[in-house]
Length: 147
Image 1 (cartoon, rainbow, N blue to C red):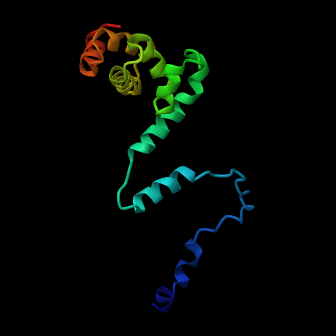
Image 2: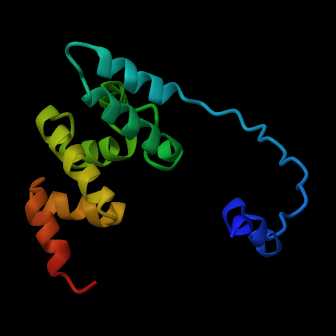
Image 3: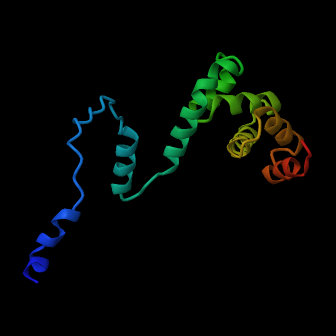
């Protein structure tokens, strides 16, 4: 019985460990945690302003498409882009509504929302123009259309 209590009876049943594997090389990738640091700093403040992160996110998403949409020399478009709106959406809004701040901002808001849902830029612009920036009607149009 003593052999059962001290574990020697089980010595033959213990699996052998694999030989040590060579050390895995460390990654040399440099991580950039600036965005995370900004979020943590904002969370520590008494009055948080989370909307500025959405604007930064939108700007970074639309920045690569700058060269493909409209001219960058349009002062009306540049004015709205400088206020934090995406160039692609602003270019289309100014094309449809001119320098009308209310209409441009409504269009950009609806445009971004519908684009995030996966609808194409051309279709979103057409639907918003057709329904005077009414995002709900534009969405219903997409959901009810066969294409």
